[in-house]
Length: 311
Image (cartoon, rainbow, N blue to C red):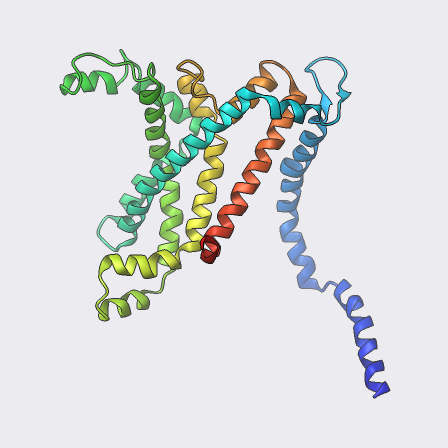
C-alpha cells in the first residue's frame, strides 16, 4: 500500500516537470501564433495600458501631465453631456441592430438556398461591406444633399413630396437616413456570418422534421434558431460593439446635428480629446466605454449561449 502511494506521489511530482517540456510540435505552434500575439500586444494591449495610465492624469496636449488619481472618472460620472451621448448611442444601437438582422437574416436564408446565380447574389449583397465607412458616409452626403443629391430631387420627380426636402435638417429624417446607410453598408457582413451558421445545420434534421409533418415556420423555430444560437450570438456581439463605437457616419454626414442631437459616445470622446485637448479626460471616457462594452458582450453571451438564463 505504501509503495502504491509512493509511486502516486512520484507521478504527481513528476507531472509538472513533464508539462514544462515542450515538444517540437508545440514550439512550431508557438512560432505560428507569435506574429498574432505580437500584433495584439502592440496594437491592443500597449495602447490599452497607455490609455488607462493617461486616464489617471491631467494630460494636456502641451505641457507636463499631472497625476490626479480618479478625478477624471468622477468628472465622467458627473458629465451630463457624456451620458446624454451614451443614451443616444444605446438608442441608435438598438434600432440599427434590429434593422440589420431584419435585413441580413432573410438575405442569408435566400442566398443559402441553392439556386441559379447564387454567387452573383452573394457578391452583390456583400459588396457594400468592402467600402470604408468614411467613403460610404461621403457617398451618402452627396445622395442626401437637398439640391445636388439624388433622394430629394427623385422624391419630387416621383410625386412623393411637393418640394425638395432637406433630409438632414430634421432629427427623425436625418437619423433614419443614417440607419438606412448603415444597414446598406453592414447587412452583407452579418448575412455572411448567418449564412455560415445555416450551412452548418445538418440537412438530415430538416428532412426528418419535414417527413414528420413540420411546416417551414416550425422547422425554422425548432431547428434553425436553436442550432444557430452561437452564430447569432457572434453576429449580435459584433453588431452591438460596432454600433456602440459609431462615429464616422454621424461625424461626416451630420456633424452631430441637427442641434447636437446625434452626438454619440465616441463622438463626445473625440471632441473632448482632440477638440478640447483634454486627453486624460478623453482616456477616462474611453475606459468607461470599454467597461460598458465588455459588460454588454458578457450579458449577450450568457443569454444567447445559455437560453435557460432567460428564465
